Length: 185
Image 1: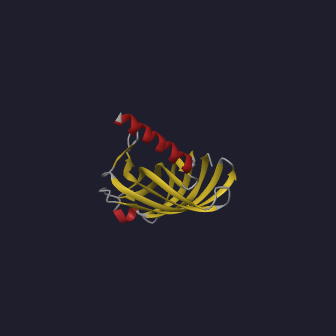
Image 2: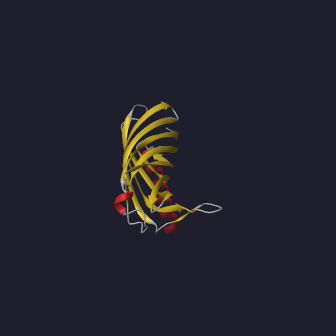
Image 3: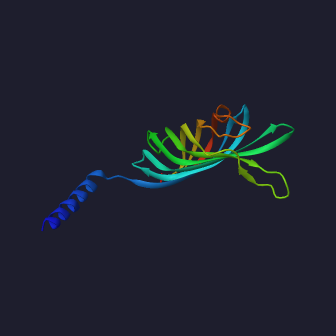
């Protein structure tokens, strides 16, 4: 009997909370291209993120990025790829239908890979995985009811990568780019 009353109370409370909170949950995803500064040189960054948009304000999801660069080490010019993945959060200021600003952050883990030379060149881990934090400020420009153009500026902060070519300070840098955001906006 006590379990039945408790069950009825929980169901009633859940219905009451749901009726009051009229929350909206929508899915979205974005592809991104940007330029970042690594070791004083420009590097191409390609990535994206996806997640859910709650009440037209908060985005919670996952992000993945890869930037490509080359650096002269000794007598050879070596190619590198830094890949980082993590959780993505964003808060939107203003209405989705108008031009507005949002602030986002990626927190995750990344690693530097070096392209090997030889018959079958491939990228191999160079050093160790490191924590990554990337706060960003975004200008959102609505194009249609399901697409926005985003222009962003951010700063990439990494931990120690333990490789021969780059230190922590050389991996950190300013990033700026453009994204196309699609979904239930």
